[in-house]
Amino acid sequence: MKKKQNKLTMGTKQMEEKNNFTLIELLVVIAIIAILASMLLPALNKARDKAKSIQCVSNLKQCGTALEMYAGEFNDIVPGPAPLGYNSWYELYSILKYLPAKSKAVICPTAPKTEYNDVYSVYGMLSPQFTTDASKSYLNYLSAPVTVGTNTYYNYFMDRKKYPGYQKAYKLPPGKFILMADSMFIKAGRFPYPCYIMENNRVTTTTGGITMPHDNRFSANSLFFDGHAGRIDLNGMVESRFIYVVMVSGSTYQVKQIKF
Image 1 (cartoon, rainbow, N blue to C red):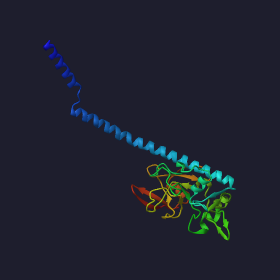
Image 2: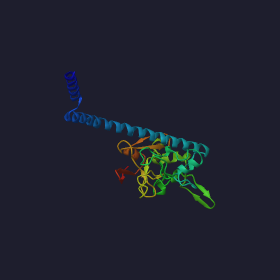
Image 3: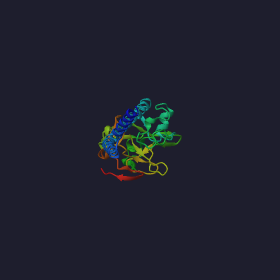
Image 4: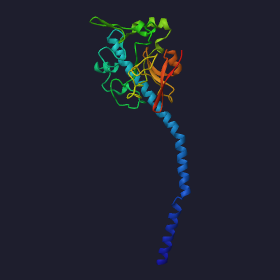
């Protein structure tokens, strides 16, 4: 009996030795997994970035719906970035119930903080001060003046009914006119968060600017005057009369000039 037990024990040990990986075999398996991961990771990252871009366009469409609702009630007048009496366009829309309070729909999914922060860290709305030269600004063509007491304000609201005059002057169709887009603060303490206000002709610590967080930082998403939302690259920005864009690399930014 003892001899049989010894043979059985030896057989079990041999099977265990056969089932154990050698160090070389284990390293080969790890190397294969690493190669597969390196092949799949770019595709997974691309799919994730694409999903964020699609969500961003959806967000802008929701903001566009709020804008249309407001315009429908106020004779085709739409607010600028900081309407009179409000800190930002989003504060107005949320208070008047066109958009929910603390909505994620006003923030691009690529933003460093996708949770609601405040009424300033939201998509950028084009400022009525379209250029510093008032004669060339859309303020000159599209402003909806607001009179309070003896003061008249020209840069808080826009009258969409006046767009044919602007289009005639600049040959810019409504489908190319950017109303709202991915944007960014360059102000210390606010960078790299979204900025509620942007201008086409300058980027400052108070205005922020359009930025390109999509397609490996080669494009932005925008809401246009005709109500559609979609992708726009540098060529599209030139067509839309934007002169500057905020380019981001890691934890730094560069304000880049693009020319007509």
